[in-house]
Amino acid sequence: MMSEKFYQDIAKIAEAIADIHRRAVIAYTPWVEDVCSREATNDEVDYLLTWMFDFVGNEDMLLLFKKVCRKYFYKYPETIAFYILEYRKEYDRESLKGTEYEYLLEEDKELYEE
Image (cartoon, rainbow, N blue to C red):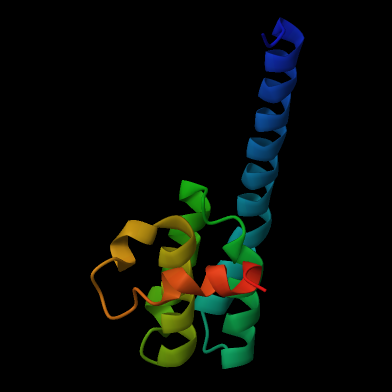
């Protein structure tokens, strides 16, 4: 059986991760506001979304991520489509099933088969 200490340690780790996510939202908010207040380059948008991606499991970060995607959806459609599909693949896999993008779910298997 797992000890009480084990569960306390897991709770501490979970809280530390949540704190990192909260801090990421605070850190990225000014950057998102800046990029969305002007016409950023495709490289700037790509760079920002790359850095944000690991934190979009957090609802507040997801809202910031969506803000950038909405702002640049028509200006940089290939970049935004890539991140939307990556989001769906990583965080909402069920949404890809039965679509033309279902093949993306198989890409991970290729990495481990050799």
